[in-house]
Image 1 (tube, rainbow, N blue to C red):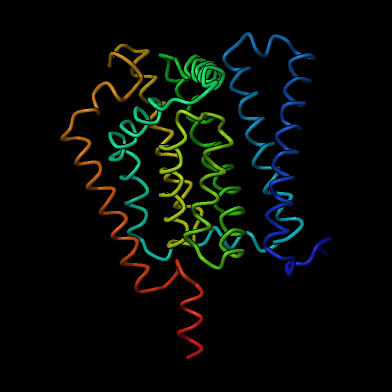
Image 2: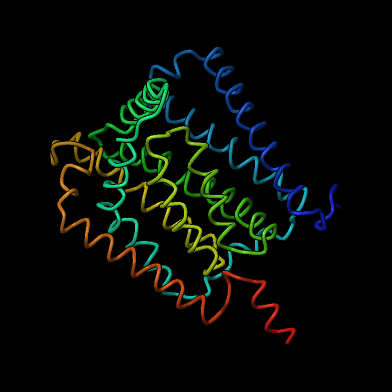
Length: 295
């Protein structure tokens, strides 16, 4: 038995889930503080830091999703169905890699923006980036597997569960338009990472994942995309630590004009492909589909 009906208005669901997410953020912070107090040595080892990172992700997004399922959607498992088009698996694997030059260019552009009191945000982002880079920096295979687990698999699962499986679906239901659902959930996705100077590229990546979910209707495809995207970052840091490449930042070799043009062309092809599929299925505009069926 549910405490709340599935017929609760989408706006109410949205506001409740934002409140739940913020509460889970606070709970994650409290949990990590408690663990650090009880076991100060956790922060002194890489394994301990990775464990804390995984716990925080599970609480912030995994617990938020679990609460949503309990309150509103006991049939949530339907989101793990087979994708509506098998070609989406190819896009989920290829697109995050081929879009690296475009994302790097957007990141550089975003980082060049300036606004009052930006120093505080820049310092916060720098501290976060340095902390993540330190945890990712490993030259052992075991260390790489730990990085992949915590920074690729865990966020790919829990963040997709919440942002696509919960927020995007609520916003799509609210506005009766999948594109609005994608945009709003992507804005929140990018904002909660608290990295203003990486907001735009993260928003674009989230929109691509949102389009995949809107068309494919399967969280498996989104988890695969998210995993491959984060896996590339883990591998860059691993190869840099092994001194196979000069640095973990992919912009060092991806900022050639021809690579950016090629990356943009592939991104454009993906958008065109999605809208061709949509023209056949009308999944991005349920209102239009309903209007046609009524006529």
